[in-house]
Image (cartoon, rainbow, N blue to C red; front, side, top):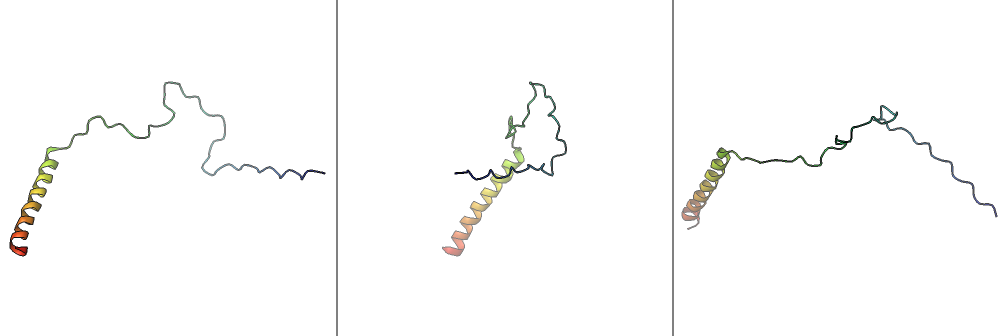
Length: 74
C-alpha cells in the first residue's frame, strides 16, 4: 500500500513586531540578558507622617464607634 503524501510544510511568517532578522548581537558574558523578575527593594522606609495618620484614623474610628454604641444603641 502506498502511504499518504506528506502535508505541505507551513511557511513560517515573520511576526509584525520583528524589525531585524539578522544574527543576534554579541553580549558580553558579565551583562544580564534578561531583567530581574522583581526589582530588589533594599530597605523600605515608611515616613513617620504615615504612621501618625494611620494611628489617628484608628483612634478616631475607635472613639466614634464607642460614642455611637453608647448613645445610639445603648
